[in-house]
Image (cartoon, rainbow, N blue to C red; front, side, top):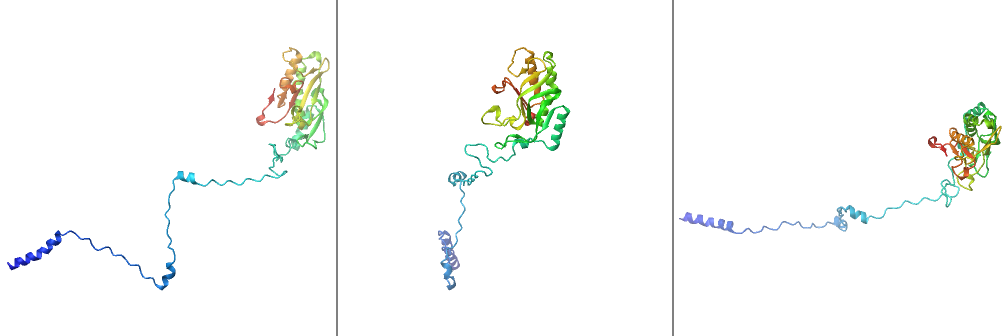
Length: 294
């Protein structure tokens, strides 16, 4: 029995410990701030670096709050006479990077010799003359002009005309290939004896306007035909002849239409008021070989 009582006494504290509510444990150990040492006094005053976390800004907010873009500095205006200078109220640069037209359309030595040889073969009466230049207008002039007095078949050019060799060649080929054969359909007038011209080289603007683009006459490319003269009978002047039903109209129409086979520009009565009394023929070179025949 004594042994039983001792066992009961020993068991009682165990049960009480199991039934008692759990008590919180001791607070976590906190480390004490270490004592500063003499060598650490200077470091204590320093402010520790703190790393700032990056913050993402939405794109929309960036667009609204971003500062305006910096503008490129404006280019300085070139001084008068310098490359790129443009005169006030003028859309054309004062400094022309290209040479004037008379220089650009001049033949090289071989091409010029070939053109002269072709004129000789056609029986054209001409002579080479000194270059034509205009001191007050560099756009005008002929670098290798010829002065033509006669065309194939003994047809005179009256008055004498100054032009580029290319223009003289086109005129001569047209007279030989078309004007002379067409005149044979007019037996009552006899042989075609002369072509009267109103303008070959002359430094002027188109249609004799006071300003604007230079005429092809200003560089020796053009010739204006005023009239056709024959050995017998009256001449045939160029004039409006629509539906007059005559041989004169037929001859004028044939001459005008065939001229566009040798010239790149043909204008005459009906084209505009400025060409009502003559045929304007020129050899202006256009892009793609385009020809203007009106």
